[in-house]
Length: 78
Image (cartoon, rainbow, N blue to C red; front, top):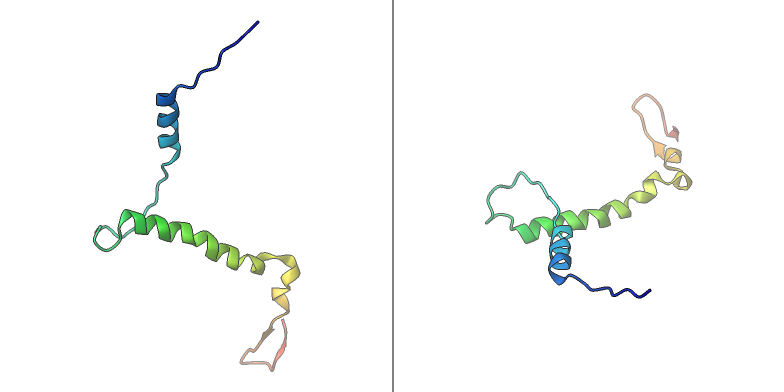
C-alpha cells in the first residue's frame, strides 16, 4: 500500500488567515486617537505587566507580612 500526501495551499492559507484573527475591544472610537495596530500593541503589552505583578499572588511572597499603620494602633504585623 502506498499513499501520497499533498498540501492544499488555498486551504492552508485560509486556515492561517482565520487563526491570525482575534478581537480587541476598546472604548476609543476615533481611529485617529488609537489605530488598530496601536490597540493590538497595547493589548499584547498587558501580559508583560501581568507577569511583572504575578509575584504578588505567589504564596512564597508573604504579602500578608507587610507592616500596616492604622490610625487606632501603632505599627503592627497584620
